[in-house]
Length: 514
Image (cartoon, rainbow, N blue to C red; front, side, top):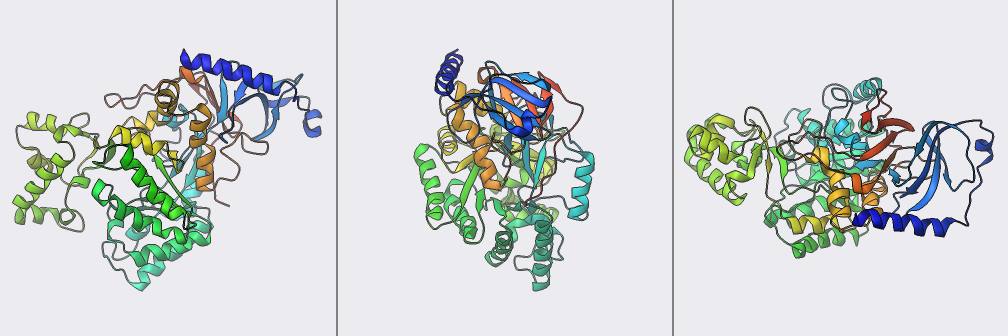
């Protein structure tokens, strides 16, 4: 009720401010007998961060044709009454996962008001066949929302002869550079790196710099899961990646500090971003609003037990050392109860649950039953006050790091949670601030020229909702429940969701960077 009252006051103030600024339709619209779409009586929060204002929006085809106050209107093929609701740009997920060919519906994102997602993350992009052929396949399937594809550094590396070598040959380097150049020519938005993962973890400074220069030549973006997110390794990992900003914009994926605590530590982290911005680099990051990460269980194993190492040989020759490492690592990561598996047959169980169920120590379970490539899990290793302080930084936009099938609620609730928990209930952000972080600011980070704002001439990706009604239903026990309360979602001027129902027609597009 607190937020509902504030929204009504905002409506009233905006109406008083705008009552003397009626707008006339441009001649091209005056000549029409009927509009394609008109959205009336809503409070427009346009994604720029500026105060909301009451206005009507007219959409023709896939483009916003008019925003303003009208004395009278013509009929429209689709007319939406947004009375008591806000009208915002569709949200843009800076870091998402999923397969637009196998699951083009992306219901989990659309239900939250997300209309564009960035795929190809953590160094892993589509590696089956030629990039242009993959683009054509996505075009033919037609996703329900827009896809901004990135090229994965790890995927480039896996295509060379020696992907696990720390120093690769000049021929292999040339092969990677040629393929990256090719994908950027075809519209890739940049390069993602998974520097904590195989094979990205084996790459060195010279290799990363060479690829960064190519990305910069196309005005693309570098995104990275940095080398190590542990609190005591964070500075060095950020320095390694952000130094590439001398050649291309640098964006830190899912910024966090594993084991770090407090808002003071968050300020120390963001001061590193500020240091590189002061050098003239374009610097940004994204954060998802959950205190548990999610990735493969290999994250808890030592370097010498994961590819290219022979794990079976390690088990035989270094068993005791491996057991001790895992005991210490899991203890450092808040114990076995803080690891919640998301992969069958362990899904929904913690490592502590498996200890009781299998009646043996968790380190033996990890070695003998699961192995470094046998499961994925959520890890409750993050500090709330630190992560919230990171969210509030001007460098940070919103992401989910989620997908339709991942067993983590972030794929179904991140954007809804930013509204419900951190804006309506929490007063951490104004509505204008959080919408900006979820739309206009993200569009600027990744280089979208005509999305992210409600602005004449921009593509008509739109979300309409009463913020007080937005409710996240996904949790760690039920991670695939859709967010409720986003009443209308339009993608490229067409309804993707209306009052809880998804449209049969999918009108998203595979975007190409200009």
